[in-house]
Length: 242
Image 1 (tube, rainbow, N blue to C red):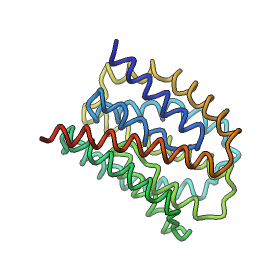
Image 2: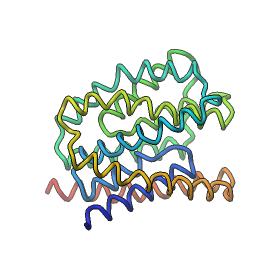
Image 3: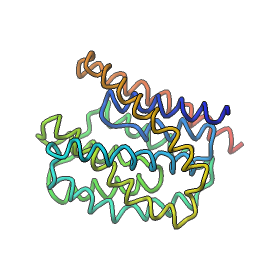
């Protein structure tokens, strides 16, 4: 029961972050869940949850999605995801925790320094490729795609809708590989199904918070939350290596 409580708490916290910022669920959920479950299981749970909730959101937000950008990002993700899945299969649990922490910290640095990528078809596919690698390796496709879309003149509502749709696409792309590797089991399916209401509830509360915060306020909240997540996960992974 303690494991279920910890997983549910992690999903809810990550969902609140997702509701506030429109992205970042896996960035927070995977490191937090990996504190109580093996990282590979945490990644599978995050991918399953993003598939479940993402399909509904694609339907709801379909008129706001920038299809041209979504297609190019998705083509890149198809190429990059198998590379990430190979890394997931080869790395140990503690090594994975350190990789997760590095990815989260890299995302934080990019957010703080406001790193921008020049817009264009090749850049979109390149961002999608990197997102695919991150998705397969750690269920974290966000940083490259977020950096790319924030560098364009796309309105915020369309950026948010395109990102959330893309995260669902990357999860769907990664899912067959996870089944092929035997990483999707009864426990992960059960955990994901039982966690889904917490994901929806946390997203709802996050959206409430978002409406009360200015742009600077919610970015600071997201950065602080991710920083704590990265530090805890890195400490846990490093301690397991010694």
